[in-house]
Image (cartoon, rainbow, N blue to C red):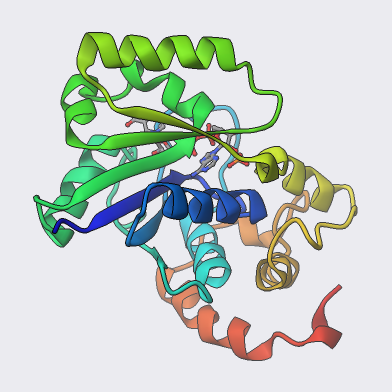
Length: 233
Ligand code: NAP
């Protein structure tokens, strides 16, 4: 029987409990064997703000997913140059995990609503199913209409998943850090500690500058071994 693989695509700047609850809900509802978190290297549609370097977003994602045996993190988007087009992501993962497995691309409904503007949308729509995760209050009328149009016109298989925990947003987490408000209980403690240690999301913070990738890789074990309740802000 084919393995059912969820591909959780996102910028994860930073990853928060809304993302983790979404992945776990999708795993349960769609009987996924594995959910692969895939932090974007260079998000294709983002030109308006500076994105935190991939190494930090990747490491925070690793820290956040560590304790779930069904979760893993892929470097497939951050290890290749240029925009992280989803069609390239799925092709590379199919080479890695096999062409006959079943793939489900999971992301925010706002992103998935724009699917027809992505690279090679028709071919992409035939390669996997899509799970559009929504926040409470998201206008469902437009979403339902788009989902049925995509199905009727392109044979796309798009599912909607409403996740109350998505009331948490990365934008809010970044703004909270910038203004000194707490983020405990919005992100896992390991992520909170990583943000604090690397002074992410503070205006003019040194961590916004790029460092060699190897330094970030070396930071992971030290972050894990050093976390302790007294270290947490
Ligand atoms: P985004 O604009 O950062 O996010 C759109 C909305 O969806 C935000 O509200 C975001 O909340 C939420 N969201 C993002 N990822 C999510 C996830 N995995 N689960 C639940 N909610 C999520 O979107 P993006 O991160 O740039 O793009 C999402 C994915 O689509 C990425 O993998 C990207 O590469 C892909 N994409 C591909 C193309 C293309 O191939 N041309 C174009 C656009 C996007 P938070 O801010 O709280 O995360």
